[in-house]
Amino acid sequence: MFRGLPSGTIKQLRLNEDLKGVTAIIEMASEAEPLLHENTRFWLVKPQVSLSGVRGLETLLSGYYIGIQPGDGEDRREFVADSEPPPSSKDKPGLYLTLSSDSAASVYRGSKLFYRDIQVGEVIDVKLGKAKQQVLIDLYVESKYSELINGGTRFWNASGISIKADLPKLDIKFDSLASIVAGGISFYTPADGGELNPDTVLPLYSDYEAAEDGVAVTVKFPARTPLSEGTKVVSQEIVIGRIQKLEFNNDLTTQTAHLLIDPRAKPLLRAGSQFWLPKPDFDITQIGQLFDGNAIQLQPGPGIPCSASLP
Image 1 (spheres, one colour):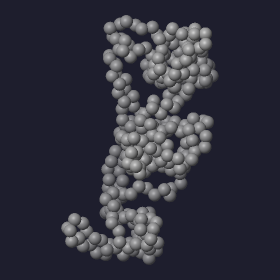
Image 2 (cartoon, rainbow, N blue to C red):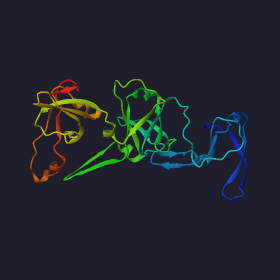
Image 3 (cartoon, rainbow, N blue to C red):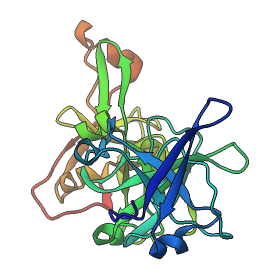
Image 4 (cartoon, rainbow, N blue to C red):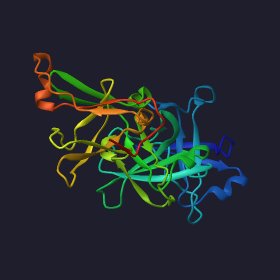
């Protein structure tokens, strides 16, 4: 079968001499002859159940069949079938990208690509790079969502759950339920990211913090405020950002904190928003603060959106 159309028929099956496989003699339709080249691939299509979904479900009614994916090269009439379906051919309308990572982690073929928890594409292949030092991840983005990606887009692994133990509490972070179950990749795109070159291999970061991409905000604090790089920003007990960099002003009376805010929390950044660092509360139930330190609190303001600099 090629793209749902019959392209040939098995005429004979025989057991190989090594008793480890079988050889199928196939009579191809005359109009399918241009498909037969050196890199053409064949495989047995059967139901496959995985966390990313069910494939080949139609074979429950029609029975197993042999799939064919055309390739290039010289004409050929003898082939070795693949043990599993090959990666999707890049012939559908849309955007194709390649990411690189030190580890595939829980990303695999069929994993979904999410933007604001909406599926906009999927992983079509995961393989080792030529030097065997990097994992290359091929992505397909649906054509109606391709405009969401530009040269400054940053991708991160949204699979699984991140747990940090800071007595007496646990800080648990996770993305959508779909990405936890099936694995997935999320991304964030700045407005001024520049033009995208689809041939450029982009990095896949381990998580959102590693991607270091979000809404940049600067806030001034008194010089004696006990802050440090990495101090969290919290709103309604939800971690929405952290301090990237601290700078003391020339008069040494104030310090400027450069914050990185999760883009999903951007609506909280409005004129009149208030930032403050609560004084430590020496309560036995808050002993974790002695190890983790206080977090900057954010109270959203009533005014217009503002995300550049807040006093």
